[in-house]
Image (cartoon, one colour):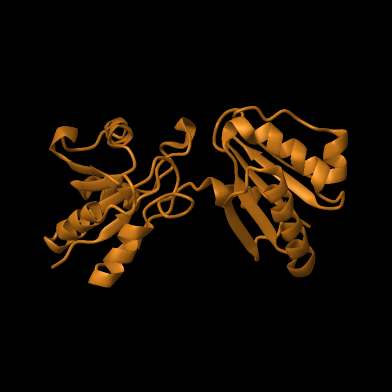
Length: 233
């Protein structure tokens, strides 16, 4: 009987490392085969969880490029040999703004069961805490870097919000956070609401939603902290 592909969320901060249910941990502890972004991070986290088997005995592959067909093939081979295989990203939920979808797609093609487990995802947590529309939302990944292209994208987002009343979400490379924040204050209409969700799950967490008009009166410095940007009505 084939094994399953198990999608395990990993911590987005040290302070929520233990926020996993017993079903999650039981399944995680039963795995001996893993595919992950970085083997070193995975080994360190599993050790911190007091994994019941010596870490050196585990079979761990790094995803490298998701287009690496040999790694995808190896994972499917493990499953077809009867092994459950755990998929882990560096932080958060596999396949949601993180790699992993190529393994899932291959599993479906091969008729292998895919099992997702509940855990922290900064995008969903930010949307929950934003007060913006959670019934219709779009995750945009990263927005363009060049100002002209960024302005064009923001114009499109504003028109979409005005038409469909949805929420648009994106992330930014940390060292460009303050540049993005300042650009938003210059380009977005005053009535649009902007939420910045900073360092979710950490002690310095800040999740603030204000209109652009309010932000102009009370701007903040984000710095190089991990941040989710959300805009809506």
